[in-house]
Image (cartoon, rainbow, N blue to C red; front, side, top):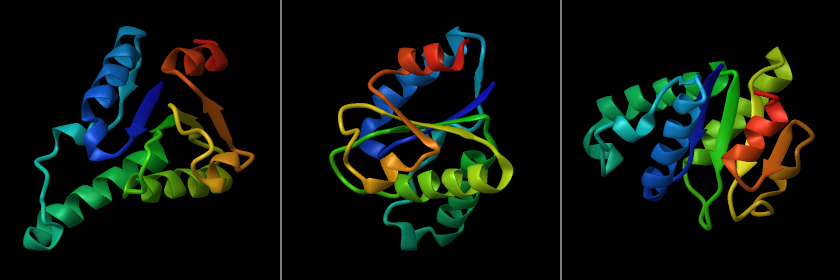
Length: 129
């Protein structure tokens, strides 16, 4: 299965841990945004910002399993989360999980297509893989 992991930039270390877990289980991460060269401030590198935005939105829509690692703050990860929900409504995939310590942070975490879990291991149990 192809996975996409979304989170805020400050969570890169945890995202890489989850990515390694997914790969160890024999699956792949469709796009790894942690490998981007961060174009900040975004308006100083409009070309890279646009390129990464397209790449990450496409990956969040076209994966088999979308994982949002929750955060205490609001960031761009919610654009990817929204596109995953929209594509799941339209196309029937990806399967969407929100994991972490902030499982009630957004009302959208309670959308009927979203499954809330505390840890990545619970996602794999739920998927039966």
